[in-house]
Length: 263
Length: 271
Ligand SMILES: Nc1ncnc2c1ncn2[C@@H]1O[C@H](COP(=O)(O)OP(=O)(O)OP(=O)(O)O)[C@@H](O)[C@H]1O
Ligand SMILES: [Mg+2]
Image (cartoon, rainbow over all chains, first blue to last red; front, side):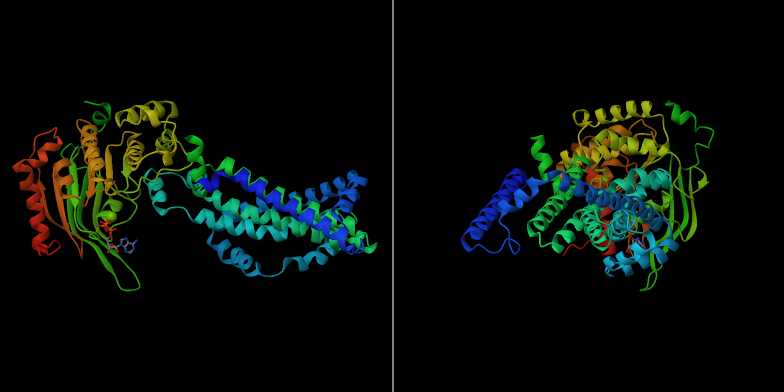
């Protein structure tokens, strides 16, 4: 319980390590003076960002939009499929079996194909983000919906609850912790998908910033994009985690904390 | 007489609430069939408190599930209030060994779950739920979450949930089995108080011989492999009963009688 409550402390610890690493990096670059296109100093990377923050923000916005588009679609379609799979033997035997089998295939390989099908706009990027992310949402939602205590279902049946009531009042809330686990995985995967999509086509987004900067040996610019991506991924992940904490205060893994707030 | 009883008086009052004849239940499995219940003849009268005691695995839960319409007998007949059981009978409340409270609902919301399932008027159900929570001493925990409650309080809440639509028939499967002895005694007293004059029929399953004698009008003693009712014992003790009745010679006479059945069957051994 005590180590859980020090979430803020842990955050400060991580920040301290990161800042320390940046300082070491800066000092090392000043001592050994590598060529800036091999390894730019943090200060140079910062001034690269500061020289055109609007540009970087716009590209970040684009990548974020693609990621969220793919993620939300994966969530919606994944949820609908999962409910279908749980209630239909046929869907389970066909669609779900196929999905589980395909899960280990590297989905990024489909990106060039999507470009042929959908052009170079935002659509193939959302499609690839969706394709990568949906596996996590479907599989974890199915697991969650199935993991319901069978005795709870007996209780519902003894009161003649309808299947719809059981889904709404028992299965769904029981599935939420598992769904969140899938969502946290899916959001990271959607970001990967968005970047891969940007790598293979178009001229916008952080993926394109990296590719174009590479063509001109603007290594500092590449680092800006990479760092922004790192921050983006972290913020999205912890945003979902905060949402989970807020929505599922009962979730066992976080129960210790609640008790402390209550006390 | 409470209105819930009057409305049912059209049904023959002599007719038992639960009527099982030649009940048999076989579970098919890869290792062969398991005969969980055999030759079950059981009539539970309206308003009667009947307990079933028996060793682990003798089919007590199976019997209860059949009555609740959650399992079907392989053969034989089973009627609840004169109707063959196909799905859960109306006016049924169930309590399990685990309280099965939903972690994401407060105590009162948990109690109201059954009211929602039954499509009751939620305003009225809420009033009733609050009354019940009061009766069980949970008035200060109405808006708390289950994880903030002790085991005994949680089980009280689950009993309130079973009672929220005022069921005529209450099925309880070792409801106090997971509780410490003191809490268990306390809940025995509370359950008796709630049941008395309520007109409710209770089928109560337990491992506890003393608990069965304390609560019941009759006790069915079961043996296992297959599960059969070996003996039916009328408990002729005055009500209301208080805990000290357990030291009386009449009481120990009844517990001794039940123990002797288990001893003679080799389910209990003196050595
Ligand atoms: N769904 C099932 N499938 C197969 N066998 C079952 C099933 N349910 C129960 N049984 C078997 O039926 C027998 C009776 O089980 P039951 O759960 O009714 O016993 P019980 O008297 O309630 O035991 P306990 O006191 O331990 O709760 C056991 O041998 C059990 O293995
Ligand atoms: Mg049992």
